[in-house]
Image (cartoon, rainbow, N blue to C red; front, side, top):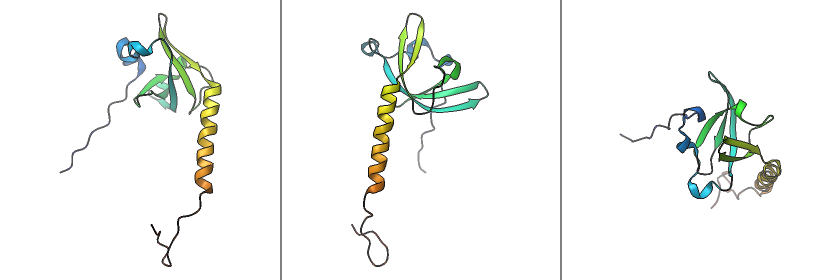
Length: 123
């Protein structure tokens, strides 16, 4: 019998306590960079799944995010006295997209691995 771990239940920002949502004290001075992982319609309305730097995700109602946000966008997230602020980072987003495209281009231009007469890859 194999053990498996169930994925954690989805968390909505509205359901999280303020302390769960906040970054550790040493990180609160500067905004964290969160990535918009996905946009989806749910029974609760449109939400964005945001990936935190630690790899955890949080679903946030789209109405709380800046207009025009898209998958792959990078957001500065900072908790303050008036609540959590989400600010788009267009230059960082563009730089990240260009870096990802360069990596993809490099992978696509690599030579095929050597194969033998049977079409198997020789290592």
